[in-house]
Image (cartoon, rainbow, N blue to C red):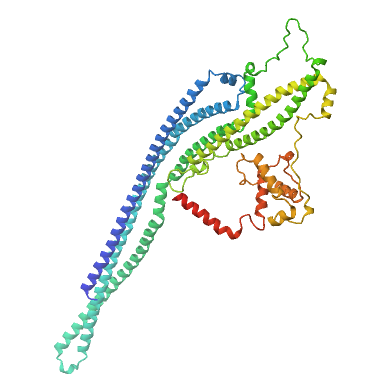
Length: 613
């Protein structure tokens, strides 16, 4: 390779090296900027957290004050009431009033808890974030000092490599130059030796001396150039060795800085940051969780009071609170007139027959009224049970409204269409009011009837005591013609063994022909029972009954018995409805024939289209 080409190659190598070093310098500067930017972002984040919790503390304080004002407003309103005096005396309150007091206490408890939460935010959590911010800034400054020192050391290593490389290039160039001069001297020597080998008899003596002198000069020059080449060659080898060693050390230093030192620098900037932030946020979590725990403890107390909402015990407490108003009055005493001392019903002979007839009429009328009033009572009780089912329906679960999505969106705003939607609530309230109206009508009828029975029964009992047991026995042996006969039991069908048709899972027409029953007893009896006790029952034909009771009723009908007779009205209405459904479901040929199914569906579709039109 010629000298100009070699110089050009050296310049390219140096330029490439300098470019690589320049890139490393730019990286070091960029690394420092990144660490500084990360610290600034952390400080800003911590500042935002401080502002957030400072604002949240203000909100908690305002909320605490508003809760305290709310509780105080209603507590001041109730302090002068008789309930409050009773509460201070023995805390034996009506269960709704107890719930009210516990609710106010819960508000005051929440007020104190939120004030405590505000104090924790201001004097604990925010202070922690301030300390973390100061620590992060200090850690960055310390890390920055170390980074500058590492950068200086790295640049020293790179500069040393550059110097060693230049020295190697210089000595290597000198070695190549010395080698070239040595080769040139060797060529001159060979040329001169070739001349001296010519025949000497043609050469003059003087010319011979000149040739010998020239050969000696060339030999001396060769020896000098050989020594110079050896010297430069040794320097080049040493320079190359030093360059290779320095190159290896430099690469190791650069690798260590990028793989290990940089990670250590980042760790220095992070020193204590995550752990301190963890502690600060766990302080927040602890405060919030303890707030929820305190709140749940208070809510558990209220829930226990709600579970103890008991009308009977409240009725007793209420009457005890006002004994003057609810204590039964003294009995009215017989007030004699003008010295009349007789205070008993007289059964002497002139009025005995009249009293006996009156006694018999009372007894007859009482029997009729008791039967009628008993039916009214059953209807009233069934209606009352329906109302209780309506008012105890579990429509209070609003958990769906507080279901959070996985994103940061707000809580779910939709409500359950089953209980909480306005149309459903309006419909249920309309049904409830209608049922209540029917209940109060029947209750009034029952109370009026029972009042009449009470008055007549008192007269009856007094006449019975007056007339004596003998007259009563005589009356019981011969029933007066105007006394209604004793109600007859519902008819019993003949035993199942007398006909072979299957009742359940059989054919209806075959059963009717074989049993002689125009309407199967099970259908007639179940419908009668449902008419008596189930018309006001919520969930009829929808709510399943007891499977044990369903099987018991079914087996009784299979044996030809009637388990739903008048004197067995304690059956569950849902079980009776389940038996009736079971019977119709098991028929071999349904009431609506299969071949008419499509016609029925088309009729329903036509009716739907008409309504839409």
